[in-house]
Length: 80
Image (cartoon, rainbow, N blue to C red; front, side, top):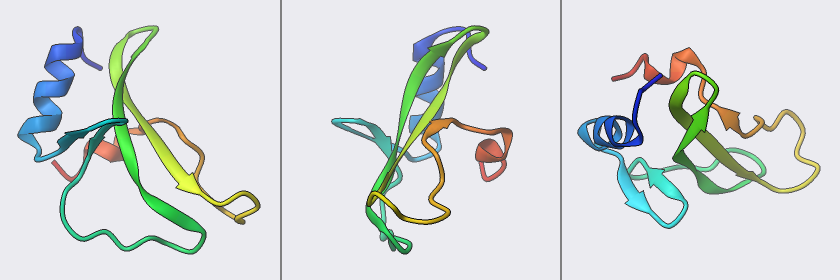
């Protein structure tokens, strides 16, 4: 959790995420999984305790076992 949106966006940019129209994305080659049609976007969102990352996944309707879009879990920050 971050106190301000600026702290969160600065941290995302430090990690190499680049801004796009929907928030941020991780640059480089991305291979879509089954049923996915676009790489996920990461956007700053204000939650009850402060600012955190919201992940938006893009899967075709009816794709089994597709991850749900929502607040990033603690494993999101493991690869920093």
